[in-house]
Image 1 (cartoon, rainbow, N blue to C red):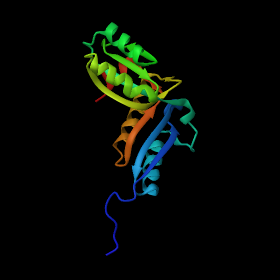
Image 2 (cartoon, rainbow, N blue to C red):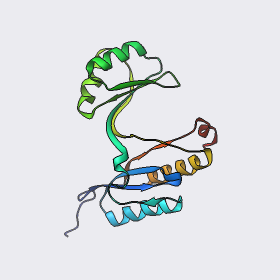
Image 3 (cartoon, one colour):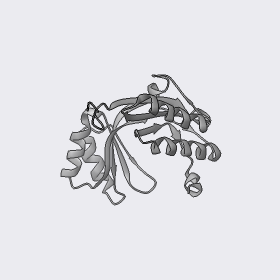
Length: 176
């Protein structure tokens, strides 16, 4: 037979669109059937009251950054010193006393390596799309956006979903 093996013709695709309240969303997918994937993504957007956009419609709102998440028992001062010395752009202390370090993509590995060598515990690290401008939403809109993001993440071909939604803290109390 001349059948092809599974996963043989996978293609990276990126979809851009707007969710409820004008929140920008980017969906990164890996698919062997672009027609099926675009239909699934479009359906998720439409069902949530959003719409799928064209290439470039929201990507200009995001920038590629290295993100390194530290535990909440890290020595913040030491982590900041090591990260800045290794080339980090910024470090933020989060509400739970954990920290997030931001780097340029080209400095990501050097900063990560310096932190590990300095004995700083890393929870998660990746180069990702970070919104340059966030959209604040009320609780009702946030719940709709959250459901849309979950629906997009649950699609078989989805690799990553990015949005510029700035969710209110009380959303946590309303999630199932």
